[in-house]
Image (tube, rainbow, N blue to C red; front, side):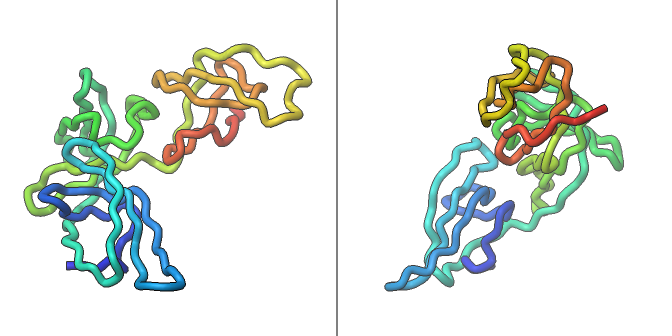
Length: 188
């Protein structure tokens, strides 16, 4: 058993007869009244996100988990296939268990969180950033880089990301997986 002071991003808890992963939290100490923790919880079974507030000192039932490195192989519709990099065993996960499946390219190494009670995979954590190639975007206009204007660009995984005007097709860009935003252009 943990308390609301142990809440952190990525913690898996049992709540309302389901297992949830904390994706956002905020400790709030109002001037009047007791402190509380405002959270956003994502169900690892169906991907639904809910908001919840825990009062200070509230007991929460945390789930013991292990993390393992897996390589993303391919997807078949809603099923995503991964291979353990240590023993080469394979698992399949539903799209809902993934944080940002549209930014995952084949061969990517990800961290899979596994429940120690029944060895069931709970969720997949992407690296902090990924490097992807731009496959289609409108050409940039020379001299039009003074403002922070952006344009949509499609990357090799099929995701669409807003990029600065100077990015062209074939450029490799670094994308923040948490926010799904462009970070920088990668020079070869």
